[in-house]
Amino acid sequence: MGMRPRVVITGLGVLACNGIGRAAFWDALKNGRSGIRHIDRFDASELPCQIAGQLWDFNPEDYMKKCVVRNWFRHVHQAIAASRLALEDAHFSNANHKDERIAVAMGTSVGSPNEEYEAHQEAYETRGYRNVGKLTSSKFTGHSATVHVTVDFGFRGPAITIGSGCATGLDVLGWGLTQIRLGRADAALVGATETPIFPMSIATACCLGILSTRNDEPEKAMRPFDQNRDGIVLSEAAVSLVLEREDHAKARGAPVLGEVAGLGAATEGQNPLILDPEGRALARAVGAALQDAGMSVNDVDHIESHGVSLEMYDHSETKAYKRAFGDTVYRIPISAVKSMTGQPYAVAGLIGAAAALLSLNEGVIPPTLNLDHPDPVCDLDYVPKRPRLNDVNAVLVSAMSFGGNHGAAILRRAN
Image (cartoon, rainbow, N blue to C red; front, side, top):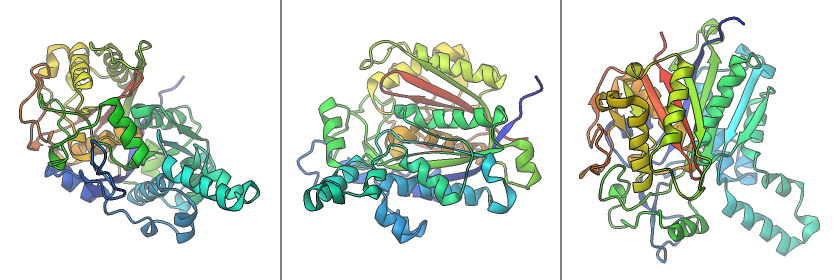
């Protein structure tokens, strides 16, 4: 076999509660600006958690036709919008690719179940089953975001939908990377979208005891690695990336944001409700990503952590890094941007990847917000409260999912 092709990232599209679009998102990250506020989409006054990271400034009609907005659900709107931003960022047009050679992978864990249920129930109750209609039926499919991204942009290569909890974002990245490495595609549009801000989602998470109740200080609620954390804050988000074989990108003069150097994944295979406190599976995923990239622990300049503001996860993640890196980890700055974006479930890994790419290009490491009193167990350099100027050549991005499936990616500065 010959040398495998290098795969680069040429486009980034971000919708986050603290910034819509690459520039706004980065401005929020480097300035430590949170997007978490009081929920205004429904009356949350009876819920223990009344705060979330909604996409406050997102108007779907800025990115798609009104008929698409009218007929499809919010997570689809977000996927289309993030993908459009990524393709524009990559200067990707119908003139510089073959549609059959473009792969598409979209991921979601929750989708838009509240909208879906209400739409179907209303149609059934008011018009009967015969009038529910074919269009209504197609809205219910789990792969609707993937379908509409391929249709909207006319891509006809391999396509897939992935739902693996908070590991989804890195899993779609890995799938796109593999399609290009195996020669099945010249480029891939990969993304994830999530809209968990509805009453049943918040109520369920409250029952699990995982949500913050710091309702009087929304911006201070997400506190990864801080001993005074009291839970997570859910958020909406969508992130899409354009991946290309390096020679394909060069041939069309595309901007290159970075290289996808390596991917790794591992599963705990134990109790689906209790995380391994020693972080062994995540450590294996990190090791696999480094091996895939042909890199050593000394080559990593920065870690974009899962950093989800739950004690069990923070402790396990810290131990995983110590297990994977040894004493080297004490010199590596580690950020937790979810302190500003909240927890967007399936988009978690790609939010981290977006932050990592921007760090590679800007030479700035975003802070971990609200890290006022570090948990003694979490004794690594978690970049508290202020950004840091740093030359960054390679970033590890981590994702940890409820159920024990974890992922890691190495993003490297392009030559």
